[in-house]
Amino acid sequence: MESVGASADAVAATLRSAGCVFAEDEAAILVDAATSPAELDRMVARRVSGAPLEHVVGWAEFCGLRVVVDAGVFVPRRRTEFLVEQAVAVLPPKAVVLDLCCGAGAIGVALLARRPGVDLQAVDVDPAAVACARRNLGAAVYQGDLYEPLPARLRGAVDVIVANVPYVPTAEVAYLPAEARDHEPVASLDGGADGLDVLRRVAVGAPRWLRPGGHLLIETSERQAAAAVQAFEAGGLRARTATDDEYGATVVIGTA
Figure 1 (cartoon, rainbow, N blue to C red):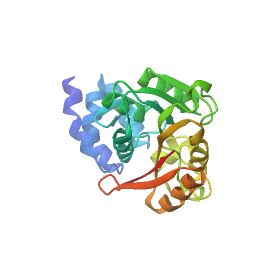
Figure 2 (figure 1 turned 180 degrees about the vertical axis):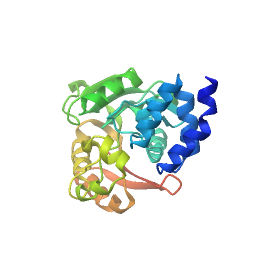
Figure 3 (figure 1 turned 90 degrees about the horizontal axis):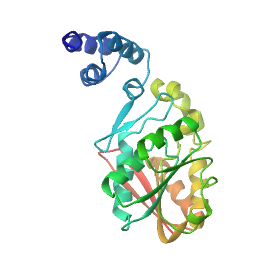
Figure 4 (figure 1 turned 135 degrees about the vertical axis):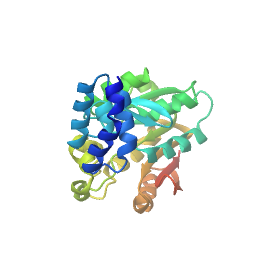
């Protein structure tokens, strides 16, 4: 593998010329992931063509953990680590947790790592995401639209619902970075006219599944926070927001 290792500087130069901001870091990851010079060439070509690094190497780092991310599946963002932190803060012992719009299952993976006793259930509408989440979680992952596929036994029994719903307004999807726009499912990005269509549906449905005193936590943007709080309150939840400048993250937290 000496020839692959020796090519790290060349890989970084190639990535830099293609516009990759963190070319050196990405080059190190690609060189480490490749099992042969030929595979490294193929991986670099995919990255230069615009494929997300996480799709190229097959994993994303999230909360210090490696999460399998297949091509075509939403890539977990670092800012969503703040949602995990907020969820951990309200988790009771041996909580029943529901992860909606779970994608690859990154949030669930992080919660299980921090609270191994959690009873985690996850849902996504995308078959590719469900297959990926099942590989990551080893827990119950249902395919379907939000609450629709859940077993009746969970009704009124969930302590915490977490959801990284799509919240990009439809008109703004076209302006997303090409990595997201061209390589991730539109349904995982497009939140409707104001970006809050899915959030509203989750908020309205949450009280039927939460225990009294249970919590719903959803990531959104700072500019959408006030409208998101209104949506939570319209669903019958007491709502507050939490923000973090380092992550650039906003989370709305509702209590049943």
